[in-house]
Length: 262
Image (cartoon, rainbow, N blue to C red):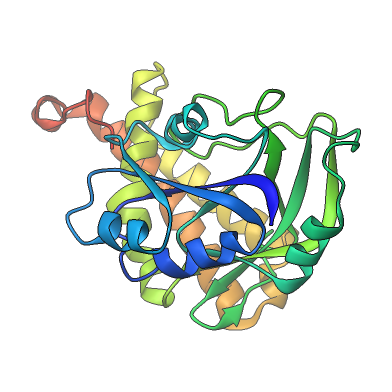
């Protein structure tokens, strides 16, 4: 094992967390779990698997991922989610790297996204490069609440994959955008002072579909490429439809708690 701290943020992940911890323990001499008040056995099974567990109410994507940095003992950290796993190629790459002498502050990994057991490569899903292995004194996640990504400044891309079991099935492609992402996105836009008009949902939804299906190769991804493109478009459409609803319906706006975007 290397002097690397593994970090995982969780919420109700008792069925996935042990495999994620075991994956990190192949290369990390400590694993830290930051849990967002899970109501299942996430914390108990994490501790039993050898992780250090800390509880923090969810603050948003980037902010939450940085919480663990105050607890780590190592300069280098690798951050993953509970549904992500290191491939053997990535483990070997980490084992073969001299982190004390490297000129880089971080390394971007190719995230290999799955729906069920299907590796989906279209719509920009592969290679989905993300900086996940980094020196936390030089780099960290931005303090944003959604879609936080680490800067690629002074980083190197590795030809090594991080597996991401993104969705269990096609149904989740539509359930999650409607339940989480579009509402979160609409609230964030509203708080930033962004405003929509009657054409905004149509424009953004249509644009998202064309970009992903035609420009990002969804057309070559078969039924999964088409379904994914439509899901991304639905998410974009709903985000702006909800933003417009906040503007034109005082009752809906009054019912929303904007202090709890998450």
